[in-house]
Structures are given as structure tokens and as C-alpha cells.
Amino acid sequence: MSRTEKTQPFRVRLWDGTLRRVAVHDHRNGVCDLPANLAEDIAQIDGAGRYPAGGCRWEFAWSGTASC
Image 1 (cartoon, rainbow, N blue to C red):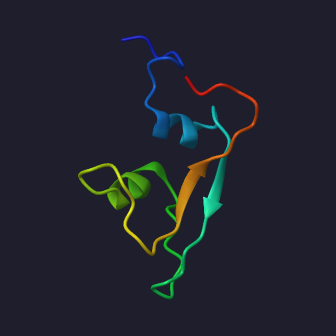
Image 2: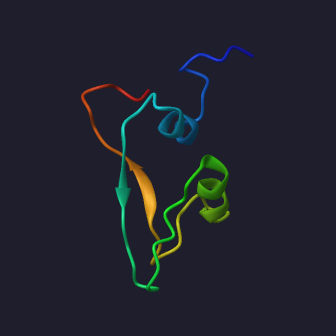
């Protein structure tokens, strides 16, 4: 399979620098659990593809570049 931007999953493009990302902090549980790498980021996501409430996460930041 080709490793072009078109075939990379969105979350991978956030981590490899293709897309701009920003940290979103939510310290309801008292600690900053912002993932330090892609594996930690994927581990935080539940089966429906959502982050749990009360956790820090990385999100896409619009930079004028189309993501699709």
C-alpha cells in the first residue's frame, strides 16, 4: 500500500506533523494525562472512537490546509 497522505489515518497525520495539532487540557481528575506518543493516544480512545470525559487530548487545529 502506498504511504501517501491520502492513505494515512487522520490520527497518524496529527502525530507525524502532516497536520497541525493543539493540546486540549481537561484536568477534572486532577492530573494532566496528555498522551506523549501515538500509542498512548490510541490507548485513550474507547471502542466508539471517542476520548473519555475528563482527559487531556490532542486535537486538529485548522491551519488553512485541507485534511482530506
